Image (cartoon, rainbow, N blue to C red; front, side, top):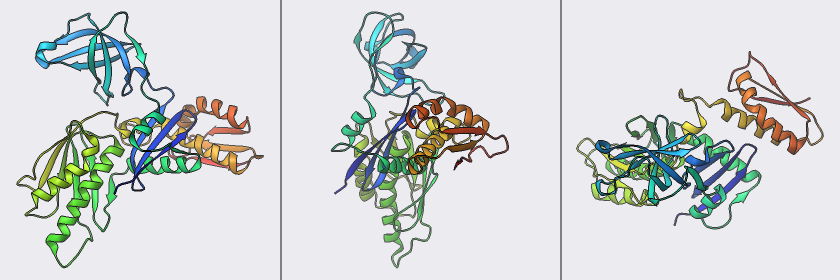
Length: 345
C-alpha cells in the first residue's frame, strides 16, 4: 500500500512543502513572499469582465492590482462585459498563458481578493495524513524534491530510464529500456512500461505538469488492458479531469491531465532552463543559514555573481534579523553565475 508523508520548510523569502510517495518526492509546493496572491490556486476574488470572445467561449477578467485571468464559459452562461463576478483561480498562470478562473455567480464592487489561497501547511494536510515534518529534515527533503523536479532524465527501478520533456504543445515521456535485461524480453518490456507509468505519474505531479502527455512505450505487442489499468491507478490522484487513451498503433499512450499549478521549472528557472537569480539567491541564503547554525560565533562571507547578489539583497535583510549582521555577500563578476561560495571569515 502506498504511503504519503509531508514536509514543511519555512525558509526566508519562501515556504516549500513536499509530499512524498513511498519515500520519493511526489509534489513540491513553492510559495514565495512576492507571489501575486490574486493568481494562486484556490484564491477567491471579485473580478470584472473586461472583454468577451464568443468565438472562443472565453472571457477576459480583471482581477485587480493588474492581475488578469481567463474564464471559459458555456453558451448558456455567457458573461457580459463590465459584469462583476465572484471567481476562484482553478489554474495558475504559465509562461505566455493567463490564469484560468471558474465563476460562482454575480458579485458587487471593484475587483479585489476576497479569500486568499490556502497556506502551504493547509495544502499539505489535504494531500497527506498527519502534520508535516519540519526542521532540517524538511529542508533536506525540499532540496531533494527541487533537484529531482528540475532533472530531465530519471532512472527507472530495476533498470532503464525516463526522459520527461515538456514542450509548448505537450509533454513527451520517453521510456528507455537501457540495461534492463532478462530471459523473457516481452516480460522485461512489460514490467518496464508498467514501472514507467507509475513513475511518470509521480514525476508529472512533482514537476507541476499537465495538459497533453504522450508516453513513448518500449517494445511491441503491448498488453493494452494491463497498461490501461496501470495508468488509471497511477493517475487517480490527479482526478477529476484525467482522460486516458488506449495504446496506439505506434506504441504510444496519450493522456490529458488537468493544469492546476504553475510548472516548477517556470518558477525556479529562466526560459533557457538555467536556475533563475532568485532561485540561486534562495539557495545562497539557505547555505548561509546552515553555516550560521554550524558556526554560531563566526563571521561568514558569501561570494556569488553580481546578479545573484542583487537578488539576494532583500533576503539578506531578513536573514540579518534572524542570525544578526555577522555575514556579508560579495559580488564577483568573475565567478560563474551558478557558483555559490560560503566561508567562515
